[in-house]
Length: 340
Image 1 (tube, one colour):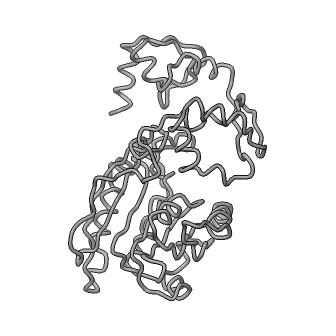
Image 2 (tube, helix red, strand yellow):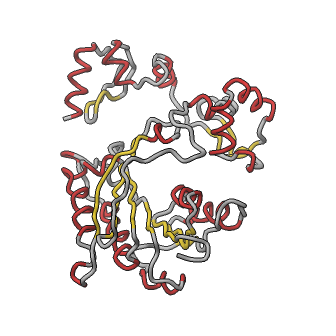
Image 3 (spheres, one colour):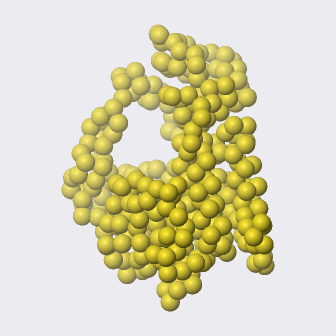
């Protein structure tokens, strides 16, 4: 603990999502570390150089390779050998079920990927700084990658941290969080791996609550309806906000929009609208999108409503050169095969 309060380190911090969350929870983030220079520069600009009256500034935003940067070097820089909490999201690409181009993270097409072992660098810092609590965030694919091998390894190795040196080790448990229940307007789930040092009483409460500023089940409309419409492949990297358009949006969606835009996103602190660019889509893809209902994906549309989609690929490894009509019962069999 410092004069500013409880202390924290964010490893594999990216542009600072977890860092900001810890700041908003009242922590003094002593260091946020990542190897990506653009991500670190973004974090430094927003959370170090820019002052926020309600946040304790990040002490150090560091561009470092955690495989080479030693915990003792960080301790020397910070002037401490213990922190209260370590959080981080080791790279998820080695676990993601979305990976298809160069192989896969699951099943027969599994490819070696050194990023899957980066959790060990996280645990190396936990072992050195002996935080009261650590939290690892990752995609759900970590549960099944390599038949669950890495999911099991992380927990086993975390429980054994420091045993050889007579240290207490950690009680470890896992839980899955639904982003929409915590106020994020995305149909997204994340895996948490949480450790509490064995010599501390009590346990981490598994029932997470939304942050005070967040509203659970915020829908996409209130969250992004203030943005100007862009066509596939269109948009600009930087443009002015349209205050009149935003006002009409807030009037339409009322408290839901006002809360998300101003309390969560804090858009009133942004001078420009940046990176509002849409990825390109083919005419075929756009026709398929038009056949989907709001909140529905292509699998559900084909399975439940017998929708005809012009797919280039029905499932992994099976390609079609022309449009296909998928009957519900055929589609259902394909989906069941995918799941198993």
